[in-house]
Image (cartoon, rainbow, N blue to C red; front, top):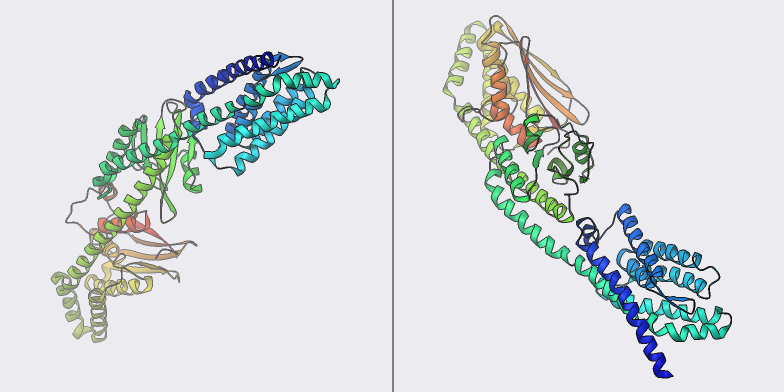
Length: 558
């Protein structure tokens, strides 16, 4: 008799393993599907992903009930295996909801059955216990904890059947036939947990692969970061696009598209303002934006996109944008690589900016030295003083003081950033000398707010010199140069306007594009310095009569 029972139990156990094997096969297939594989790999899950997983494991649990083996009104099934595995792998919400749904389902299809209430109770219990294991057990031990939890829950089922069965002999008969296969079958929980964790283990391999890809891209693009300009940024985008197989790649600053390569590039230029709401959102929030099946994007050819903020010293300075023409291309591995790549790009751009500032500082020192010993400037200034000595000795004395102060400022200059009032004092000394030279042809007006801000040295005087030499003196009659410093709240706007000949649109374009000859270090030099330091260069406008140039200085900038 005992041998018959053992044989019967083994037969039921083998049949239970067949059902569990079917569950394992289904899970294996899901782990190969890209959409589900991404979820299994992740360590943190979005609400919609948890909902999807809950539906999957609830269906597995319900299917386990329907494919159960009927023994004296009881069903030998893999429901508890599905519940415990779901909760251990994806957290308490998945476990509890799966346990509740499948437990209620089991109760409703056999209301009044001898095992319906015990199965309801243990299904819910299994969901709660699996959630606790997820919270309190390290990943490498979850498979063992899952097996033990499943066995304990099934043992609880057996106890409840014995207690609640009527007549008691029926409960004892059922338990004697199903207890061993149901409890021993929970070994399959460990198999399921290890299967999914093997997929999760791919995360490290993917991270290593993507890190190598990001470093390879960094090595290829490094030479182009030494001199950042529209063409070098475009080359960087082309390298990224080719290496990651994207359909389009773009780099922006906080207001404009710096480079765009790929699908739709005919609609963009380096001076285009950012118009997509997704990019504006990323720059304002500092958070990554992902659209994985976007049919509403402004470029209808784009279906997937990821926008990662570029940051320098914790502040967003732009964005890296990657586009695909197919949906669901923004995988976990691509996200990991893109984030790493954006960090590398941010660092390289910051290093490039610092190197650029150093280079421009050296040019500024050269400019200061050249100005201080410029024989033409000195000769003209002395001529103006000599002309005033007999006619207006006081005026001559004032010019000598201005020239002395101007020359001393240039010779003693050492700080990269100075108080704006000191810079304006030097500008005023320069202006007084030029007014003495050109007489009534030159008028200078000042519109200065009281502000506390430090600016790069020798950055206003070249703009005033440009306004006089290339504006006022190239037009007929008297001209006026207006020097303004206006408080805008969070920033200070420094402006130089003149009523002279007016700058040509070609010159403006050459300044912006970086195609000025190397030997011209006036207006272009100032534009580059301002752009490197503040992220935004000069704003240059041709007026109906004359030119208006200004730049903004953040008050907190140091």
